[in-house]
Length: 95
Image (cartoon, one colour):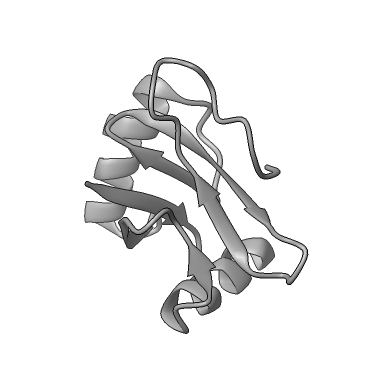
């Protein structure tokens, strides 16, 4: 499964998240991560379909199969993306 991280060009936290994903400085439980810029036509369309339908409409945000994941940092400042494995919300990480 792929985790989709929605970002925006004019979002300071998004830039840091994008850099860490690009540098492979993240932990997503071994899952693939795709970054989608919501300021592109295709990106906004995907964002509207998944996030605005199922979530709160914020960037940065991460989703896997319509379920919101938590984006945070561990004690080593490594990006952590924690996605729920059941209908329960994620329990680790910080938004």
